[in-house]
Length: 268
Image 1 (cartoon, one colour):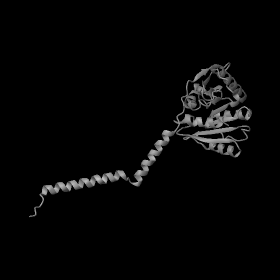
Image 2 (tube, rainbow, N blue to C red):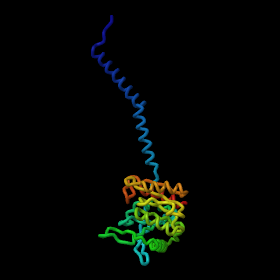
Image 3 (cartoon, rainbow, N blue to C red):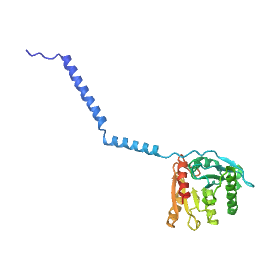
Image 4 (spheres, rainbow, N blue to C red):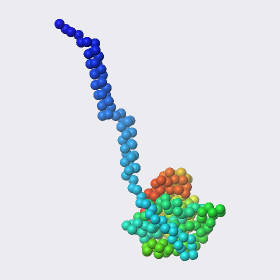
């Protein structure tokens, strides 16, 4: 004689079947995500890997204040012993500014490339607002020579002026170009950051290499146009953007970017 299943047993079996179906669907979702979800996940992993793969610049190391005979003191960030410490990398700051914040921002990226020597401008700004530069380029040239000699003596380095790189920021970039115009055989490797003029081949007759940079959040046209014009004239040149930077600043990745730019001109 046939006996029907109790209503309670039937309900239990039905619930069990529903649970099994739900678990299978969840597992299928984990095994095969939708195309959009899978693509976004892969993209996130790619971006993370790219960030992790970026090189980390070395620390700036000690920044020393070095006395210069008959002049203002200069800041010196000695190069790494395992790199090329004998190359002088001279820094000229912007108008009504000072050198230390900039040197602290990027000198760590240049330690393997040389010894950073930062001069102060030869003129004062109103109300104690930093230092600026006169138009006496011959005097600036003499000051650079004296600063290199003082840094050599202070750190026991035989700095080689033939390997000189000049880094100029804003007004300092204008003075760097003027040095290369007036003393073309001495100033052949330039790094120009946010310069107010477009550099030309006529102003840089014997230059070997020029790196041009501008902040992401400042006008870039003059530096980009300079890179284009110099490249057409046969000069080794390249433009870099300083990510997230406004005029007079270097951004969170400034040490790495400046290191690349200095290396570009130093090795040519």
